[in-house]
Amino acid sequence: MVEYRYLGNSGFKVSEITYGNWVTHASQVENDAAIATVHKALDLGITSFDTADAYANTAAEVVLGEALKGQPRETLEIFTKVYWPTGRKGPNDQGLSRKHIFDSINGSLRRLGVDYVDLYQAHRYDYETPLEETMQAFADIVRQGKALYIGVSEWTAEQLREGHALATKLGFQLVSNQPQYSALWRVIEGKVIPASQELGISQIVWSPLAQGVLTGKYQPGQPVPEGSRATDEKSGANFIKRFLNDDVLTAVQKLGPIADEAGLTVAQLSLAWVLHNESIAAALVGASRPEQLEDTVKASGVKLEQSAYDAINDALGGVAVTDPAETDTVSPKTRPA
Image (cartoon, rainbow, N blue to C red; front, side, top):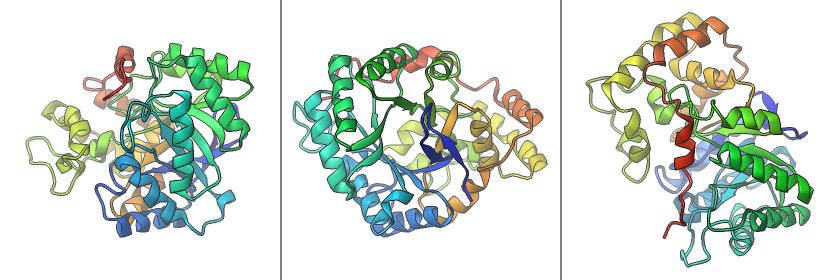
């Protein structure tokens, strides 16, 4: 069964392998298949589920809500997010203004079919809304019982410090950050993780397998596999292309012997590498087919030997992205149209 970790300095636990439905539900896979993968996740012991109102323009929340219908609410940890344009995409249908946050939480609760979410996250930092307005809105949502905990996604170290200070002043906890992180994308290690450790904030990381590159299925000099994330022009192909070069793919092939020595698949090894970092509360994984989860959940509870961890770093050291400045480029300086 999947193991649990505390989220930040709270008493709230989440499954260290968390199911995420970005680019799959209501997009990459049909609804019946999406629901089947959620049910498989539950069967395998995953109880934490991450989504966002912007995924498939709100439709992904609907699919997740349908998939979780009938499950005892107290047995689930449900996360969603607010920031990106949704719905009719009018002038107030985006960002972290008080209006958009309240409209969004009410819409998310309706689509998910629940009275509250366990974790509500700012999907990006909003440079056009005063941070005080955003954090006051989050504080009020917590007091109304619509969200139990508040997190953010892809905030810089400085933004985390400012947000944490305001949250403390307003009487609630900022418990998590959701950045991209994998053995190939390590930009949070220089500033974000040290600041988070100081503040008591955990990381819930997305793309821990670098969009599938860290499974080893993409071969240098070979066409990408049919039906893989790299062929999904809706969104997946755009995110994975930075890793699809022969230098990266050749380096990833070096993980095979390390995985064999550890008795793991390359995917399990790569997830275990992420979870080796105690600052990581959960690694988000998705699936287009239920059987894919059977492999990935086996990374939960793996205690990676330091020698294996170091060997992975050596294998990927020449191609891993580590520049902390990359975090500053993620949140748009102006709201998207």
